[in-house]
Amino acid sequence: MTQLPIKRLQAASVILIATAGCASVAVTDESLQSRTSSAIHQPAGTFTISQRVDEGVKTSYQVRTSSGKQYSCYVTGAIGMTGRVVSDAICSEGSPSGTTGSSASAAPAAAATPPASNCNALLKAAGRCQ
Image (cartoon, rainbow, N blue to C red; front, side):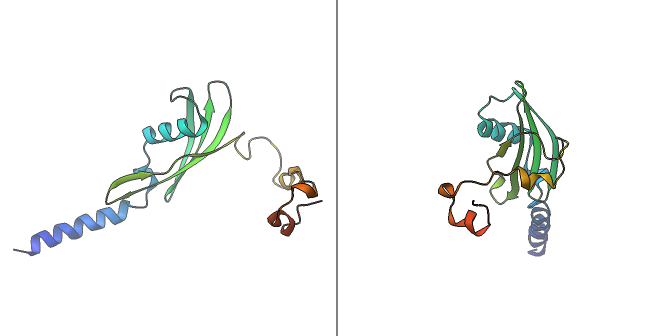
């Protein structure tokens, strides 16, 4: 008689483990709208989300506001014992990489070298100071 509950527990464990790392299951469209709204300080419904890509626990996507601003964003999400867990959205303003027509080799040259007065130890170690 104790075999049946153990088998059910094993089956539930397998399902939980199989879906625990899947952003496509954990991250809903509603959670993307909510998290993005907070990140870009725009009300939900004033922007559109496109080019969603789920990779493991990370969901990357593009955002365009009704005023034309573009953002590249991502969230992470998983399903655990407590249910769905989705991080805050991390967004950077600007067009998605690769759509501006500039080559990848031009990107490092575009980075401005800060004057010596604005350099920290990390920038100095990277050779990014004047």
